[in-house]
Length: 169
Ligand code: HEC
Image (cartoon, rainbow, N blue to C red):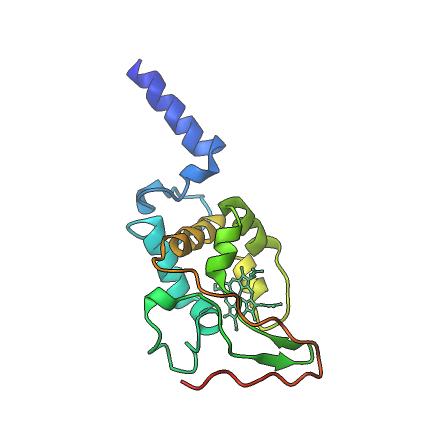
């Protein structure tokens, strides 16, 4: 009886339920041959590490790049940025990823990071190459962030329109 239960659980987590993959303690579940992933005490910690080291904050957190990451605190991370990115495409703003996470299921988020495209300088080609484990870890981390979700980032502007400067800090 015990054996059957264990086998069923292993089957479910091994193949059928993708949601099992990065759940709980992320490390011990990885097996040689699996896609690469960040190992951490939990998937939320893995997501935090990826966000902190992969540049997401530079463009998606208010004025993060300009202050060298000195501000704001983690409670403000990924709430979108008023920093304009202007080029031949017009002007884009790093969107509020707290809202994106709130509006999408985890599977939709994975799909978005896998197939997404938009204006520069969002590094879609790099993000696309992350393993699904890491995409899910980012989602779970963002979902775990405390505090309000903030407001949408400014709407993009078409080419030729001069954007207003970002607020001084
Ligand atoms: C160099 C700047 C930059 C970096 C670094 C960056 N982004 Fe972006 N990202 C953007 C911009 C700008 C947009 C909005 C583009 C537009 O409006 O067309 C965007 C859009 C997105 C979107 C679409 C949101 C939506 O609601 O449609 C997602 C998801 C996203 N980024 C995730 C990430 C993640 C995760 C990371 C870190 C691994 C990251 N970005 C790093 C600039 C960046």
